[in-house]
Length: 273
Image (cartoon, rainbow, N blue to C red; front, side):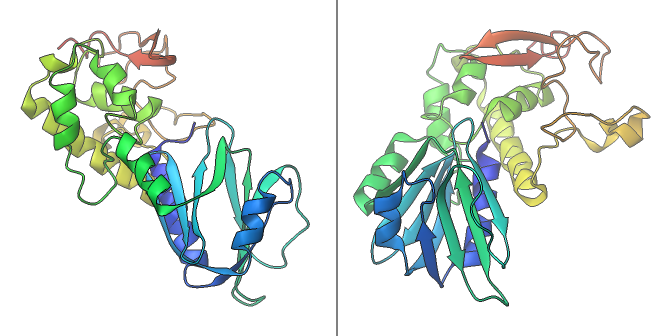
């Protein structure tokens, strides 16, 4: 499932390509036909993300709410606009032949037209997002600091922190040497502030580079003289999907186990606290 940086990147890409323009909207697959008919020819006025939720604003009609889920993808292109291929839930086309763009949404868990009130209800049930302006981690800390639940599970709870997924969860805990099974209430405020600040920095880099890189400069392949990571997810990481491989720092074996319905990755030697 895409993590929050991907959705924020999509929001920025939609703003860049379609904001302030009349947009042709269709649903080649047919599952969003009613919504597309209402939106077709309207001006897209805004795009924003909260956690793993994308919102596209059409002032005269409402908001398109998209959640990609496990299989959803958005692909962008420029004219000439080809005939749709595969199960395209929603197609957006804006601009002219000289400066136009199109976007195809495939396989989302959610693609729906909602009101401003319904959009606010989604925000209300989500936790703070490290990438949203004004979110400072304080509300998340209030929940984490009172919880007996493991910090690894709390980081994946979208009602506590929105946008953090399995990669950022594993990597930020490694970077701060924190045992993933430690209870949230056993974290110190200093530790929490460091985790939050690191998530903000790492996820901003993810938006800029459109991939997740979490290793510090001294641990890159070039600095360590090791082969670069080869993985469909891309990016250099410490422990994510590196089960049974040697830790880049201590050389010990990276472990994996199920937690909160996902695979957890950590180094027991480096994450003792």
